[in-house]
Length: 202
Image 1 (cartoon, rainbow, N blue to C red):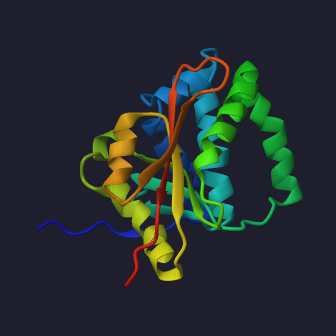
Image 2: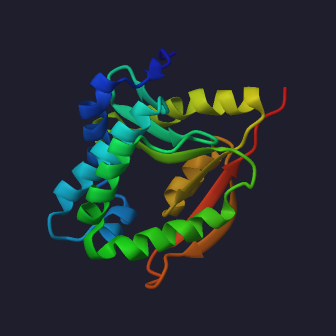
């Protein structure tokens, strides 16, 4: 029997590798080609991964990684406080640079996906990914587990919005269920599913 992967909370020193992991995981995700303009897409994805997938959750202590950072999960905690002013300034500066002309439709689509989120406080899965060479080893599920365990202990739901049926099925294996489905705003190009995992009761 294989040894379970070591999963730990990400630290500031992990940010470069965490960002690289998500940037390597997302090029073949349909959301990426839909949300990011083709011009400079690789650089846009790298900045998205560095800021929203790595730095923001690491500073909030809501990112988990395998010990080698081959897989990572970034969450938003229930009732998360506002970002520090300097970090918010960076987000406000870089958000238009990342999404370019796609920003209005991306943000509008995120609001549509949020319609299926629980009304009560919950953990929100912002990003999860595994480096291509390390896939199919259970690492993605492993980096989800610390927060899912905490959800069970605290009696709190977890939720996520995804854009492919493959990811829907993957999350369902961790106990998530679809609560809302729609399509992206304006262009209706991509399906959107919101999934919620209710806490397990002991």
